[in-house]
Picture 1 (cartoon, rainbow, N blue to C red):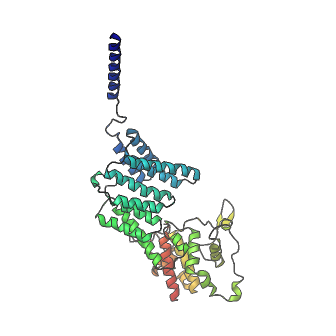
Picture 2 (cartoon, rainbow, N blue to C red; picture 1 turned 90 degrees about the vertical axis):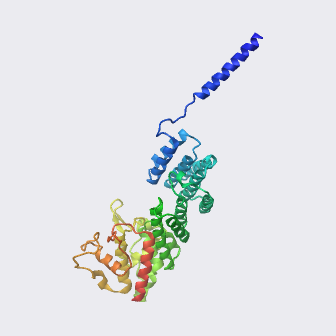
Length: 403
């Protein structure tokens, strides 16, 4: 009997000790600012500012505080997708893609409120847009459809603040997927949702950009080159060469302006070393053959050779210079080259009358081939985007046809 009492006492003591131990387990994060919700919000803001390491640190801290915090898993998935996008090594990409998928899986698993599911679907759209795996646009569209079904109390969307964030990011996805009309409609949805929401300004910029692309593509016979260039933030020298050849048909137009006996002897003096295996080699050599000003090879101090530098972005001033020369050559009007020489005052504060680009800028803007900004500047040093290049090519082609 005594032995049984002793055993029972030991069991009760062990149980009490166990319960006491459970009662003393403290949360990992206890201070006022050290909590999952706070770290998630700071992480999302860092992500918005492209501070990827800071964002990752914050999401990981949020998950240290609470490993089942769904929205932090969604945020971490976006961070990892940004790392995939920035990485060239395919092996690294594959590893990170698996981590993206795992974080999304956890975000969905631990979500138990509409606002958390909203973050999850937004993360699916954003990660697919960044990494572009197989069927990425379909996956993003599916997430958009499911996310739109949610009945979300916007007061619980601590970062996104409004449900119009979902059509905004879907608009970005459609823009990346070259579905320009869908992108424009999606940005319009955001603009119509609220007078001034968190995503209003971004959607307005997106709408203006994609509207310009739609207008450019609807007014020109766009081949594969045009479709490739249209969504680009900046146009390279090789891109512009391909656009001039494919869309303006400069080879055909120039050939019609010189005697047949002279055409066979006309060719580029040499092939720049950096163009020997380039996809747009023939287009570049054609422009070199016709001596288009601004598209000549450049001397490279490192290699001590003349290179075309196909990946260099084209500035708006350079494009005006190049298109002016195309206009001169195709109209045979040499007066265009000096039309604005000697002027004292420039209508553009960032293009002085003494600038090497001034005459070209004035020729392009006076003919509405290129446009200045509402602020009054021409943005002479800003890179030309794909839509601008297409629009300028379309108008230039129309002008040439009138001569």
